[in-house]
Length: 182
Image (cartoon, rainbow, N blue to C red):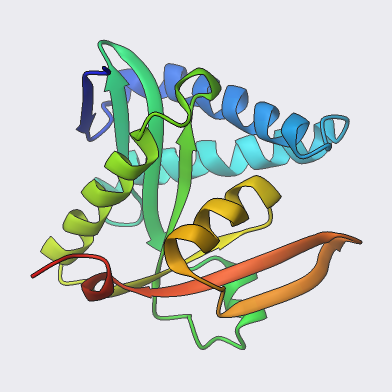
């Protein structure tokens, strides 16, 4: 049984977090059959590095991360911030005012142990405590899309072959009250 702690990252965690992002993103690309797309992997890592910097620079006002730890080892992450340009463009700006939950990552060797669910539940309570009642979430990864479909149902937007033939993009709009009891 894992003993997972969910907490806010500290500035001292930034180097390990950036390494964590690279591990998870590279693993995801490989599992998706896209491991040769090194530029895309690097671009995705840089975006996540900028997101964590934004969290620290704004003290959680622009981006807000939570991390999962097993002892001192970072094993998961989740964040929220303004809806991405991709989401805004693909929804004709109808999601522009929503917060987006993203960077829901779990180390490959810790996946399928409930770490992602712990992070999500912590984020739901965090959002609600800040008066945020709904959010959006998107994914272009087939493996993640299966998880999100199981958890949230069919996406509100299905962008067929968005990334390439057979690589769709999906966007969900989620009410926190639908997820939490009471």
